[in-house]
Image (cartoon, rainbow, N blue to C red; front, side):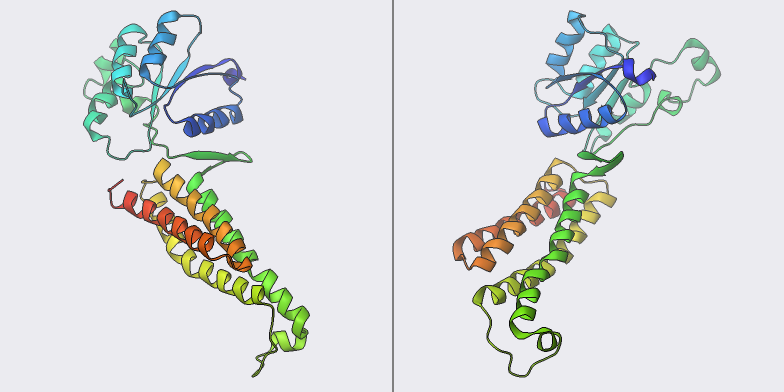
Length: 271
């Protein structure tokens, strides 16, 4: 395959995003991937000339040198290298018009003659605005949606311990009915039922926030972190609540709430 011999330069300051981009490229059979943390380091790689670079995948916002600044330099020093901007930020209009005309390739004389008013981007690959991605069995899925799926799975299985314990304690007939005076059960069974109820209550708001961020194109590292905090905090909450550990239970609940607040603040543009 052609992609197997393609050398890709990834310019990204977020280590997690870099790993996910590498996973996606590996899934596309791209074997040669060079990673850099910012535009300055990427420029040094290009100037050294020790590696052949066929394509550049670059983040929009980075310290020391932004993606646009690197793009301008690359267009002067290496105009033939295709340059693709990858960003989770929706507010990139400041450089969009210049990017439309310069980012992917410099139109040839024939293209300028036949289509003088057509922006270069129309004849080139579209601008890629990516949130944080994971590759799942050949399919691409955001981290936010992945943690939403795992949170749903956690909610689905949380009923099993306390319902099974009641059935074993009372017998199937009593457990399946509505006893007026149910026999007492172990304290952990009651606490596990409360933890499950709390998860059910929180899943509605969490699901809505993740889906709004995803559909609205606002999912990024912040929403991914919020979704991750929610899932792991609710997992800890389910365990410690069932064991009757008060302070850790409260802290876990608060961390899950923080995760949802982070996603909400990203949706309204405060993060």
